[in-house]
Image (cartoon, rainbow, N blue to C red; front, side):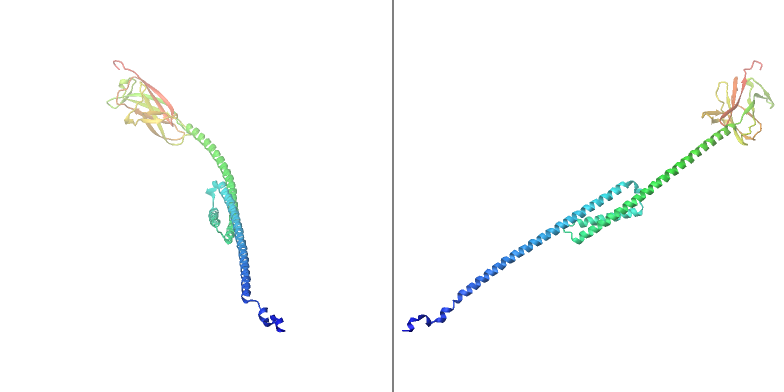
Length: 334
């Protein structure tokens, strides 16, 4: 009866231990919860990392773009300065030396290289750094180019001034020379005019030739076989010794010049530029300061006409003397 009052004491071990299946379920649930939390934590962390990477890339891109834009602006400004310098010195193209030509080539090559680097969409930091260095070098080249141009322009100004001075000196010398030449020309003209010979003492005779060979003077036109024209060349101390040309012009009573092929008739120019017919040209071996007598016989193919035969003598383009011979009509017994 005593054991019947404590029925629970028969299986004390079974009542103290919980069921095994419930513990594993709890562990599994807890593990899943931890894993899920870890997954979400990783997702959140990875998202933050990705966002930071994107922001960093965007920052790098923005910085790179800004840097590239700044470099592009610097390139354009440098190019503008260079073009302005070239334009302002365009009139010096013919004076550019080999240094300027070489600078032109170097600047052009650097501009092309810089533009190629800046044209890259995904330009690296190294490439932008290279572009920046080239722009700095380009600016130095442009400054050097400008300095050389200014030097050449300064030299050009000096050369222009020297040229103008030389031109002024040349013009003065030319003016003085022209003045001297004018004086010399005037003097030569005076001497030339003064050296012109003068004719005087004209004797013009009608000559009748006899069958015997004797000659007889006559004034009857129909008996005249030739005119004998004589005159003196006066002394002239200005005229130099040498050959002088005397032109004898004979005019018949009707005023027409007598031209004979047998006498070598031709034309000459007077001092006033007029052309004149001469009957005979005489080459005189003149001696300075001496009087000389000249004589020519004028025969013509036809009979001499009645009236006045006028004789003019020219030397050096001037008329130096003249004479007249009148031939009359003969009577029945003349």
